[in-house]
Amino acid sequence: MAKTQTSRVDKLLSSMGYGSRKEMARMAMAGGITLDAAALLDVSKRIPVTPDLPIRMTIDGEPLDPVAGLVILLNKPLGMTCSHKESGKLVYDILPARWRRRDPAISTIGRLDKQTSGLLLLTDDGDLLHRIISPKRHVRKTYRAKLARPLNGSEAALFASGDLMLEGEDKPLAPAELNVVSQTEALLSVTEGRYHQVRRMFAATGNHVEELHRERLGGLSLPDGMAPGQWKLLNEDEIALIFQ
Ligand code: URA
Image (cartoon, rainbow, N blue to C red):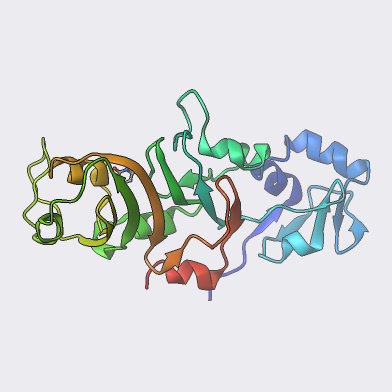
């Protein structure tokens, strides 16, 4: 079993974006930090960093944020970018502001285009991120695409063939599964994450994707009724669903 890490309180809180170590010392002296319902005055104290800290520790009267190893499921709204750097509206703006200052940083697991909505995961767990995006794992990503023109009937076979070569690439796409919903709507499941892949796949058939929404990642679906911009933390069982 992995050994529980310990950390100085000031270092831990600073790495979670609450402020500098000096600010944490001042906050503690003012009674703003509690552990197990008692004021914690000395921020040089080392404590075990366990997942139950958010129910044992308060900061300014609020439960501590989740400690490192968090996985967030977001229903990404249209018009937001999956980037730390670009200008305009970023998906990170949806999360609490101090989460932008966390170390390790929270990043999106893969990306959705600015004009794609739906299931987006974010994490500060680099190993998990790589396991999910690794092509070797074949995690299925299912998209609902609304199309400008009616399907011509040949798409499912072409996408499943493993022979479709996208423009400008030298390796054909892995087989993908198409389920037709109507003449201009389909669900497409892919296991790779190439640049603008779904839009380019339909473009290769002479069509154009007008709306794109990711519904599923592995066995994990966007919860019913989760509005665009809403998010939640995933528990271990939900994380395991990704690999099913
Ligand atoms: N394929 C696309 O074309 N866009 C996305 O955002 C995801 C997959």
